Length: 333
Ligand SMILES: [Zn+2]
Image (cartoon, rainbow, N blue to C red; front, side, top):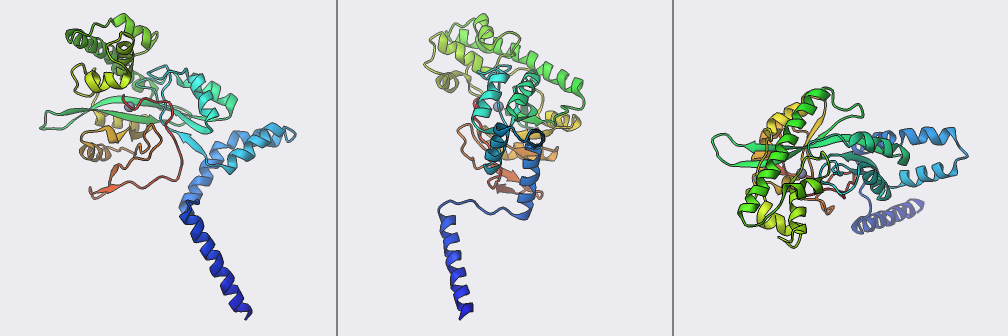
């Protein structure tokens, strides 16, 4: 009888569990996932646990630590500061990330790592980690075909940064130089389309020393009254292959992936959902060592992207266990 009672209680518990699952409760992690989660959490809170044990009276620190550990560890793995086409300085970006609960932030400006030192400096104050990164502008071109497509590759480094910094910096400087020529060419095309725009205007929006991008040109177009908003500037003139679109001196995507490997980084394909030819690009880049794909769009939605398996077949990507958003970046460029 006692046994029966036990069975009944257990089956009730089972029902309860089932209900929780249907209601969108947390999925149980596999042993491998929880091991990974624990080691990431340990890394994220490494410095903080030191400071809280050394000052046990510091109630503030203790409180922050407890609250954060209970929640998900929020990663932001794609962000832009005003060192490329973001609106915020690296310090303000870090501050905003902190206010949004981000614990690990990768700063991935377009073709430059110049904002990283400032981000690291500020991140120390807020107790969050910075992953030094960069979003590299490249071109994918298929042999035997005339079609070319711009591809952005994210590079992530350890806290020590790239191992051959000079080689990477030369590579990026060349792309940045190309960005100046490209912006001037886009302005020329717009002028020919009877949309007068001055180089000085775009350069002022980009900021001193910042290599201009399409977003800076689009902002100048809005300010000059040629279009109503940024979306319209891209949809009508600046989209890939559009009437005012231009390329700079972007390297081949494969070359960038190989360079990221050589300099000790992880190479990740940015916004693959925006590509015209994702399957061919992913296949080719995986062959030269691509480590991963971006899977969340700027609105935070998980996007179904394709993934090549070792045998070359395609598979839909499963959701990741680590939660991350995408809150200060420009999906268009
Ligand atoms: Zn991009």
